[in-house]
Amino acid sequence: MKRDLRIIFMGTPQFAVPSLKSLIDNGFNVVGVITAPDKPAGRGREIKFSEVKQFAVKAKLPLLQPVNLKDNKFIKEFAALKPNLGIVVAFRMLPEEIWSFPEFGTFNLHASLLPQYRGAAPINHAIINGEKVTGLTTFFIKHEIDTGKIIFRNPIKIGEQETYGELHDRMMLTGAELVLKTAFAIQDNSYDLISQSDLITTGEIIKSAPKISKADCRINWNSKSVTIYNLIRGLNPVPAAFTVLSGPNNEEIQLKIFKASYKMLTHDHKPGEIFITSEKQIATFTSDGTLTIEELQMAGKKRLQVKDFLNGFPITPKWKMH
Image 1: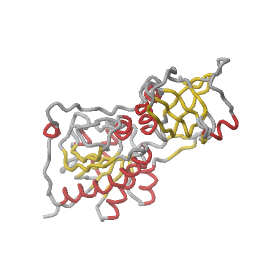
Image 2 (image 1 turned 180 degrees about the horizontal axis):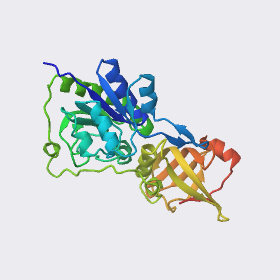
Image 3 (image 1 turned 60 degrees about the vertical axis):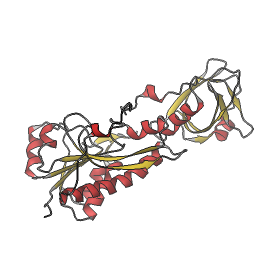
Image 4 (image 1 turned 30 degrees about the horizontal axis):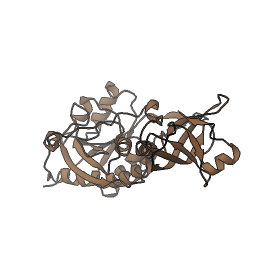
């Protein structure tokens, strides 16, 4: 016998929108949406709605935007919606009063194959670490973050040149399909739960995916070429890997790097030393080869192909990356 679901959806960024849309399009009863409060954004500091709010307003869905998820007024408003299933896609950590309220539980969509890459930035870290495969997981929320019992997992191959932005957008759409599959399974009460501990093989190292800090984004030219290449892919387009270009007269320019290629070769140059290639690109020596920068951005300027950057900003091998 099918369960009569009353779904409360919790999410904020664009990544969550296709999941919410797929639930609505397939006739699920979404009794409310919880998203982040409006906040000023951009240079004009104009008030900006989250992408989930924009969709919810157009779809005329009841909307809650609590500042504090433990606020009594919010908890009463949440309970008044009488949800019996919670669905979370790209939202903040929930207090137990919220995730334990729905009769059929609260499940989360996580952008990795749990138990690998628990944390806030799983897509970035998978690419940065040079993984060939990642995936999506739906699981029931419990106290410890990203540790609940798994409902479904869906592996996804990572392209050799794929960036964070490209993989994010693919996983956003595939994630919506997995959320829908999970909602149907809960509606039909036809699923088997898997403990995350049962998926850990002997000797397997569990990698984490903490929030990316600015320090994480700085390129270390003493690293291997492929390590730097993967860092650039894993942070493109945001927050973007960066380096400092310093000149012979102590000039310093911070550059975000968006696109590069690399070669393995032996050399006797110091990492960070540069030369200009015949294709008008900047090649930088690494610990085991060179990394050729193809697209970059100076602070406050637009993204440029390196040859266009060099037309307006000629540099010589006396400059260095650090």
